Length: 379
Ligand SMILES: Cc1cc2nc3c(=O)[nH]c(=O)nc-3n(C[C@H](O)[C@H](O)[C@H](O)COP(=O)(O)O)c2cc1C
Image (cartoon, rainbow, N blue to C red; front, top):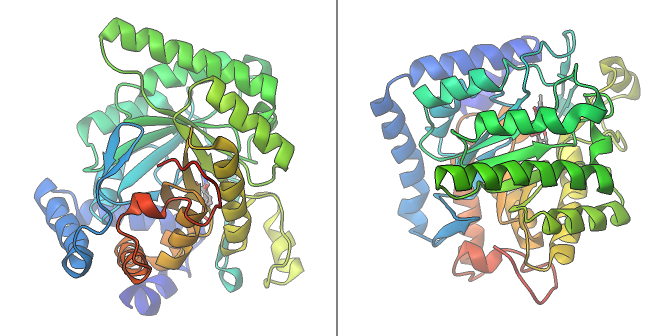
């Protein structure tokens, strides 16, 4: 309520990216002590646990234990500077990044726009970040109290035919702090990046990353990290089939579906206002259905061999349920957090727990893919 009636109207008067920066600084300041973070997190989690108990059961995905299935999507905390404070809001996991090997400014501002009539955002940030080593240094000092993902992308100055070495360097840099690594080949805001979703290019990239992953794990006598690939919603069936094939062949842990879309159909915002934003990826409510359909398709194709993290238009427990029942084992949100505010994770978990109970589902695992109509199910 405070968010809808007070904070959001105030923040929405500021340019979108300024509002983001100021609110993140305020959050990190308010929750700068470990004790206050632990207290807030416990309170927020306890609120729905008191009503629903341990309805999720144990949530174990690619060898990691998650407290709840609701995560923060990549792009929100690009440099890992706010992850520890954000974790206090009750997220089950936080995906920091996208970071690139080299620090870069991204596109000129303004590059983030709100479409309130559509509960959507358009952005063309273009991987503004301080570089992989800076993220690592920060997260070494200040780790979030939940599962930590690091999402890596290609540095803008690196030509696309040298992308593999650039990604491998980022991977080798972030592996010391990450619980899992997400390979971003689906942002629409770095020229030619999405070409890396083509089967030969993707195969070469993922094979190189996994080679390094396994070699370094053997050297350090640790386990290889779970590696996931993040895909665009603007892919046809044939492309999805090939991506599943390549992901399996390279023994990935899973697929994150989806990034923002370049489509702009059926928006309530007047066309002129949408066009005035210029180029960029669309996120939020208008992406919801498309991303759920991609999840359903990927789940059916993967036949239990890959974990799917569902992202795109998750604002409520019902949206999370739709993605989980279509085959997502975990969900993430970005735009829903911007519109919903600091209590949104708690609300989603509360509503999702309520839906599980209402439907007589005894654990989250039982819900995964229950409306995907296939025999094999993955968690
Ligand atoms: C402002 C903004 C920046 C983003 N930056 C990244 C990014 O750096 N890397 C990435 O993989 N996805 C990025 N995304 C995509 C989100 O992680 C997510 O996949 C997408 O927004 C769909 O989810 P949503 O509808 O909950 O926002 C960004 C999204 C927004 C709105």
